[in-house]
Length: 396
Image 1 (cartoon, rainbow, N blue to C red):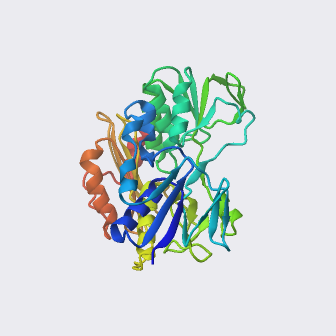
Image 2 (tube, rainbow, N blue to C red):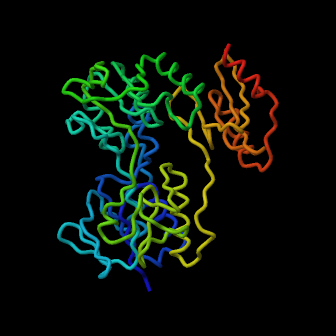
Image 3 (cartoon, rainbow, N blue to C red):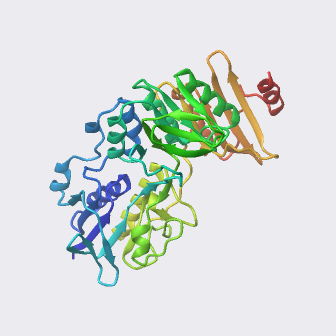
């Protein structure tokens, strides 16, 4: 008997789930996907290149519209679910009720909006969706980016490619922490400033004003547009309103099952053992785990080993995996080429590799270091400095 499966959300995890279900058993489910964005599902990873003008919106869709028609998947784009009736197993879209046998929340995350005076001004735009990119690009003039994590750095670099004044404000002392150490963070700052991006660290914002951003120390920076890249939060509001157990996100087990029968969750909206995921790769793996269970062939459940983060800024090659914040008993091995400005760093704890940080020439080194990262024994240290040598070199 065909079961009615409804997926709330049309992002990358939802698309991977639907693809896997269709591949495994196309006759088992009548699938409906409801997404509030008026687009086909798209590759969110490519929003930074899109903002930079290196990609076009036409290059971002994950699947063509014909795919859904061909496989009998009902796609309802540009529609929002207003209510979920768990007891009757139905949900409401405007005035229409839609029944389901299996319900999947794939609602992703929502941008964190700092509680700042002026954060509701029309020129203040989060950097999260295709529509956000369109709004950012539609406003000419100087830009201020708030947040010095991966997304903020990518947004600032992308905006600078269009010319004009760009300021990056970050409350921390180092960019992209905790994915970097102090040395790599400072190298990144220098590379951004060499491109004409003003980086202001350890700052506190007092207010977003009509023509700029004012700091608590009185400094002010011109801005026709203010881009928010201050983090995200799991979008679990609808699930919580429906009676599904939520904490930071929608609480699920390692088979992606939520607290109520017939309800599951995948992607950035869910939480497992107190942990949430903001990267695409683990979210896609969760979708595969759920597809296996829904098809009656559950595997071992979701487990994830950090595969690393790569900064998506043309001309700046930075890759980080594992832990970068060293403890007193950790061993740090580094290699620094001041001519080519290539930096490598390994963090070992109890004789085991716990963190890798690479800056420069990733195409040669990232694969080898990923193999070392997965190994159970420490990698060879040839070409790396000892902890004492590192201390001396970085002081020079």
